[in-house]
Image 1 (tube, rainbow, N blue to C red):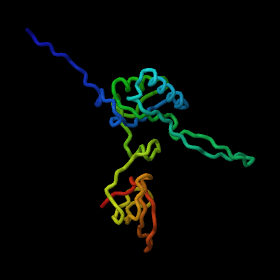
Image 2 (image 1 turned 90 degrees about the vertical axis):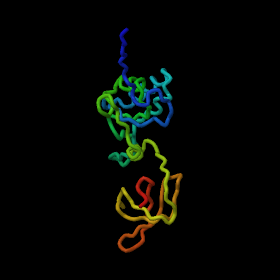
Image 3 (image 1 turned 45 degrees about the vertical axis):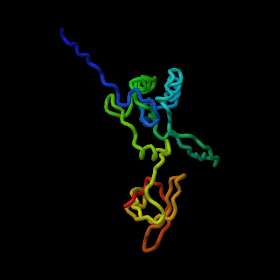
Image 4 (image 1 turned 180 degrees about the horizontal axis):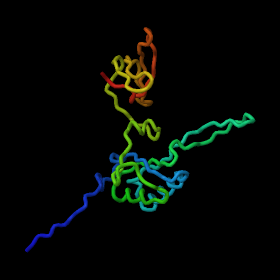
Length: 191
């Protein structure tokens, strides 16, 4: 009797997992001007197929801009931050991957071929898509190094920590004086 080997295709990492811990943000390319249509189409497909546990959120990042007309009248307009892109929080499985890439208006997903690359927590935070909660291991009186922003490379002595707003307040020495500054948790690190 001869043995028969069955070739199996390994599923995408995390296949079958349906918990929010495995969900990450991915960037999806769309036709320019079709971002909102793609968002609505994906949301409808998710509802129709009962995939709310795999595709958790679809976002078209926007900002409000004040336009001043010739007559001095102000008008608030909403502008897309990243034309041609939609950001999706999902757990990548064969099923969710298929749904997104085959949605009308989607031209691709940022990544290498069939391997989408998720955004880092820092990128998500900078884009303002989602507030990332950062647990800190410093306390009032500790000395921290500023790692980003206009005060990068400065040293900060912690005076106040606000975990709800994810902000640390303290003083740094500038021009021979103690200067009070307020930074986000992601902008500092412990020595």
